[in-house]
Picture (cartoon, rainbow, N blue to C red):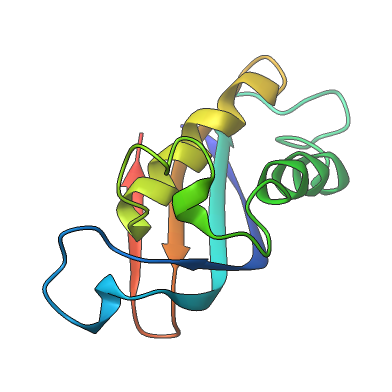
Length: 122
């Protein structure tokens, strides 16, 4: 049994998909919509997985390194393809170390449009 916390945030960034055979190989941008699901088996003394204010601050700090950038020029996407799948995984990996003890990332979804997104499940 566990509790889940869902935080949604947005940022804007451009990318181009390497080796893609189509228009997405060219530089284009998205208003990315990010869903982060955090979980804990036990609530903190305040009765929360973690404070929403703290969760949003941590996520915002990580997203700020991508906001209004060309993702292909920002590590690790200068080495790996900046797909929605890779973005979701990288965000998950960057979030986990900043979380309080007992709180874990469950999944991160990176939406590049209202109808297209990819989820990384830990």
